Length: 395
Image (tube, rainbow, N blue to C red; front, side, top):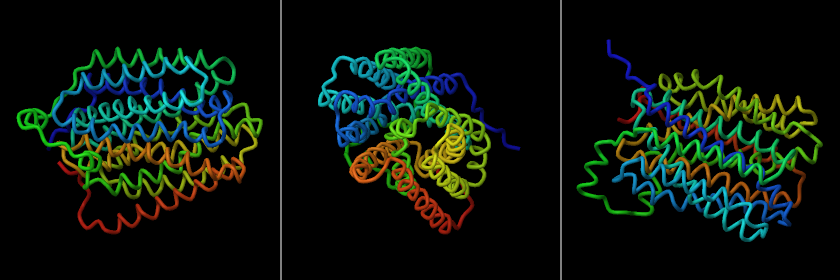
């Protein structure tokens, strides 16, 4: 009987924790920047641009970092990204001029694109290929928990204290991440050492797109386009409805995503992504409609719990699906494409919904976005029908 490769090593644990604090530091700010822009005089289009500027920058930097990852060791790149994120965070309170905040947001996006791509690629290097679904599921949990717990904490701080305190707490979490990464020993694949001797030529498109993984990356883009309405408008929606517990949506989102992760990760390794993703899209669709109809904190809790079970389980499955279709040598590029699909989805969502927002109420944005999850269901089902061989990741 073949021995199961070890997953829970010290580098993997430290990387998970460092990535968790990185995402918490960043995600604390994310839902609060639109209302902050509104508070300092930004209009409805500028509220959308605060997300779009960031997403464009993150997408532009990822082909370059994906190419660099083919020849460079991980640790210096990870620390450079984390320190850059910390510096950008500390600069937000310096000005209240909307244009300068938007430019700062663009620079923050460059740092974020760098950091997420290097961290995710380091995880791919550490996780045994035969446990990619489970391993990247746990790595994805550090992302999901950061994306869910931190916004709820950030919303609470922003609503009850000051934007400056929010910045200082975010910076403190970023410092913890840097310390954890400093103490981590990262694995360098043999393909990187080989590429150092004969560096591959840079191609922007070739480093932006991994052809083997384009389909799951595209489906990821559609999923995050649907999620973009929550990122940009949930705090504003809560204020309109007089709901004091907007953070409860994120809190129960995190709780259900955490509870479900061990089961969904193992299911992915055994059966692949298709049935798992279709099940999750159906639950997420229902959650969006409950959120759009929310009038009480209990409604927010119910919507958050279902969203955590659905969307929270979907995203690590998408990442594992993207990685499983490519080779170790191009995992950095595939990983960058995965994160770019997330940023592009959220960024374009902010622009499109920013236009629609001028004509409809906030709740309607959630209803409109929910139909993206129906499209994701259909596309995943179509891909599942094409499968003629048993599930296994590319080695």
